[in-house]
Length: 284
Image (cartoon, rainbow, N blue to C red):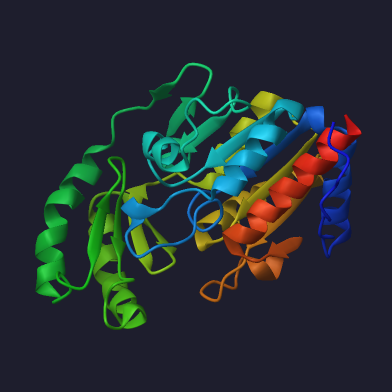
């Protein structure tokens, strides 16, 4: 049994402190939910090169057996998150769940299978239209389109001026999405076109009902994680303790402004998960 506990950071809000206390007091009723990119995995220029921090995965393998559940809630396809997270076959992660495409897809470590509906036709139409649109506004060479199957993301991180490229893209992509009944989700130098009604808040709320969680911790880094923060705030109003954690960066401030706890990017998330594992193991 581990006795050398890492230091846990203290949330800045009373609700956050109550959420952390509930998780530590009754870990078997707690759900830990995590975004992938920018939270478990550092942000990189090419999304296909992102990999989860090995320290975070190790901490999750220690933590998961003591909790009600650990779930990854991501905009990536579930199978891609599993691959890039290197979650498959890790001892201790036998009950891990990955909700991909904002909950549209689900991977369970217990079965090793992904369940997902067919993507809506609007995604296919946008896939065909995007090259011509990007060429028409002279951004074909300065952007990178990530095809997620059920969604399409246009990244500007590699452009000479990523902010200017993002601003130039916004109106044309809004118009394209509206024509095909899709929504546009902004992120860190990215605009994602995806089916309406898909967001991390709905995915997390459904999972918490399924698990009948007594407490929840959610950690994220980007604008797409605000919906999950709102879901935690809603269940707190209904009596479920909750803690919101921001994986902080110099690029996004909106999430940090409403978080109960801010840590220093994926390294800070890995430190937090390690400290939680130390405390839960030593208490057991």
